Length: 200
Figure 1: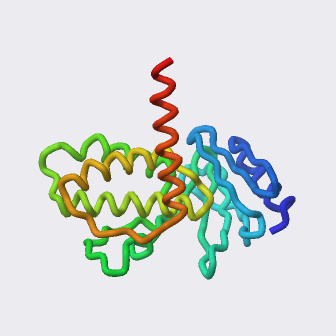
Figure 2: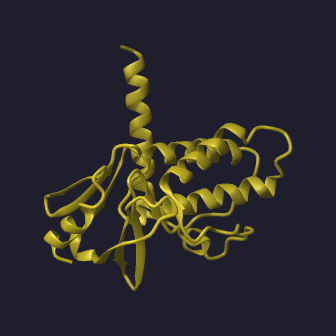
């Protein structure tokens, strides 16, 4: 799509901060503290859509290879499609695949991953359930990065849960993923800066 068409379509969401920077479309949601960064050439369509609250929302269709992925921009959230489990697990991996929602709000992802990180040590969780939930949350995060989001805080909770769980449960391998590695590197850097700030 042409840049002016995208900006015009997104004017409907006045709470989102939308701008073009270095040729990239940036859609910042202050309520989430995250920004979708997209190449305008990858956006094939932008249209107003209905959401249950009745608030304005715009759905962007984003080309990724042979796929077209939706990214819905609402007044205070992003809604996207989680990645398939087969797309994140190695070919020979064996793990029960959890049921995935068709669409997921960023705020829901943050809430669920954080809640799991704080509750996973409580008694009553079966090992298979822990592993399946960890996989589901990785699919959430992979889905977010595919549409230009960079959920470092959510990924930090996932990394925390993964480190705790893999001490007790052998998990199947994930596919190599440079984008995921970059996200985890930013989690490490964010933790380093947090620790550094505590020393001052």
